[in-house]
Length: 157
Image (cartoon, rainbow, N blue to C red; front, side, top):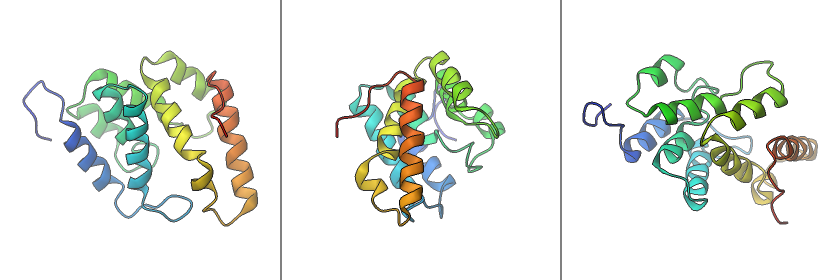
């Protein structure tokens, strides 16, 4: 980790770290996982998110997907707010959607990142790449439910 002592790593380094951590991983449609991370980071930026939220967007799935460890996150040259957002967005095994949503809502800055994540996950063109209609339906329902739990309006069709 570079950067000046006491300074958070620059976004370019956060992006490179996230890309390296998820190297070789693909999404459910077989696309490189880094495409999802980039889309979420761009979605956060487009929604007016700040650098801490954009950094969290790049790292939002790193712990959950075992791409990086919680210990790495704890020691990383990131702000406390970025770390808190990443931890809030890390779904725990067996955790209910309600509890997950409550943690996101209670963490400053996390809702915007999750909104960008859901927007990309539920994008009809992304979902259309899935071969299985049952999976498309299940994921659409899952994302719609999470948006409702978070108090987010449904995106225009």
